Figure 1 (cartoon, one colour):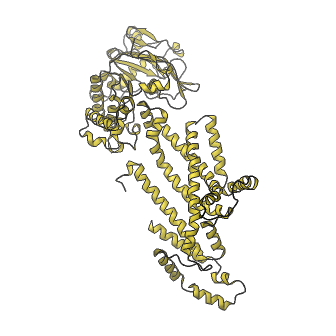
Figure 2 (cartoon, rainbow over the protein chains, first blue to last red):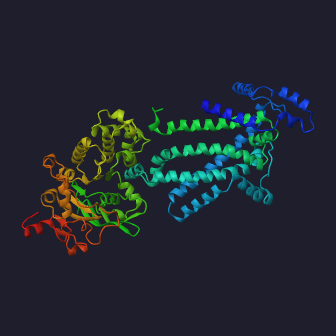
Figure 3 (cartoon, rainbow over the protein chains, first blue to last red):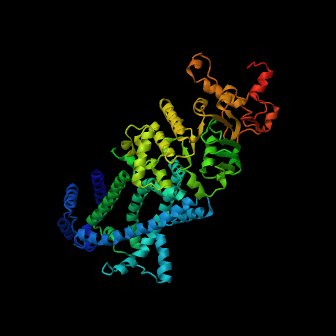
Amino acid sequence: MLVALWGASLLVFVVLNVLPGSPAQVILGTQATPQSVRQLTIQLGLNKSLVRQYLDWIGGLVHGDLGVSYISHLSIGSQIAQALSVTGPLVLFALVIGLAIGLPLGFAGALRNGRFSGSLIGGLSQIGMAVPSVVAGLILIIVLTVKLHVFPTSGFPGWSDPLQALRALVLPAFSLGLVEGAILSRYVRASILEQLRSDYLRTARSKGLRVGQALRRHGFRNAAIPLVTVLGLELASLVVGAIVVENVFALPGLGLLLLDSVNNRDLITVQDTAMLVAGTVLVLNLLVDLSYRLLDPRLKGSS
Amino acid sequence: MSLLEVRNLNVSSGALSLVGDVNFEVDAGERVGLIGESGSGKSLTALAIMGLLGEGLSASGEVRFDNEDLLAASERRRCELRGSRIAMIFQEPMSALNPTRRIGDQVGETLRIHQNFSRRASEKAAIELLARVEFAEPERYARMYPHELSGGQRQRAMIASAISCDPEVILADEPTTALDVTVQRRVLDLLDRLVDEEGCALLLIAHDLAVVSEVCDRVVTMYGGHVVESGSVAQIIDEPHHPYTKALLATSRALSVTESASGADLPSIPGTVPSAGQFPRGCPFRDRCDRSVEACVEMPPTLTEDTRTLACWNPVERVERVSDGAR
């Protein structure tokens, strides 16, 4: 995992430093003299060799020092923390909504397989998957805020008023969670169907359990094994999706920070944010692997 | 009146008939063998008796257990009977056990369902049951997961689970087919002994006549979803009337060492079992049968003669009597 993280850092660094555009030039504007640009370049440490810059950056990361923004001169650490206080709850909220949609729909789809209502659920989830969360967000904005004035359109009031803050997160979380829920429902359906057709569920029924009881006692844990993988991937895609959706709803989260920094050639902030996302995805994958051990006794003792 | 009576049982998938007009009965304490090649409808018959047919399959006719028609009974009533009075052992002990739950837990589960055993009591009972099916260290095995056991051990655990509530009849669907030849004997002997001790009835599904002849009192031969012949083990083994039973018997006998040592080709039944819906009209066996006659294009009626039944237009024995036993 550390190797993967190191690889990610190298990739992020190289790609961003290969891109044209000098941060100093952007900061000082087009009117700046070449001399002042050079001076700022030295001040920012951008005249050093790339290897040196890379080592400085990585060295800082290892010690928990994310550096200082070229543009705002604020600590990037505190900026990212600020952004996470929006993106974190947004992703969790979206996950909860995704689960709340995906689990019951998936179950209903599996138990009503072959009947009209089952096909209807399948069709709905197909539509849900096809609609990108940006479009879903825009539709939600038009219907619920512009027409019905139920929710604020955009912006974030901060956590000083938790209720207002949650209200501001409802729509973005929904537009993210709908799509994830639709995808999840298909996996849940497939997984539960597989359980319903399994031999051991038939054995459980031969002992006198009803279908529902047999599924609860014998199917859930086995069904959870593939679903955990999907959930890990979904969380990762939620983090990425949040970056897009935050821009639609003008939420001051990680996504906005990332895009602003890209526009400003604030390379070090972009690097840090990208590393954070990469790190999160890797940690999620690790958690998925660890949860297999808990769920599946066949993996115990093997490494 | 028998303990288990199967009357005109039909199993179909939509318009496709898979099992047609199956009739047989199992008396209390009796052991009946159900034989035939794979695809003859034996397993479907057993699953229909249990009420555990898969998706898209439906059963009609009557399955009377203790004079109660199971096919007409509610699912609730069927659940009360399953496991407690009718138990089943499946062919694949690996997939039939839940991979994520411990053996002791699964063996004791039936007692928790039907006799309100507490978790602790059922675990204790499971250990005793495992000891009865010859586990040397039942406490240790009770804590294991199915993947830690061998095929024979898994099937013994399944048997332990099946006998836990003292059922009146056990349906065993090819319980030794998936096992190594070396452990088949042990599992079979165990099943034989336990059925004896419990005094319960047994419906043993097998494609090996030798297995059935050792364990059972009576034999029912199925082919193409129909019962083609039935009778006592002695009657069927000594003088099979249906050409299909006779052919099965020949292949089964050839497997004994003494006869195969003769160097002759192993006898086999020509052709293969067609897939469902591909059987010929009339007698399902007629295109593989070396005795088929014109009448065979129509399904022969099932004739009952004392203790045996037969559905064949040109049975073995009668013709042999005429044609001086040239065969």
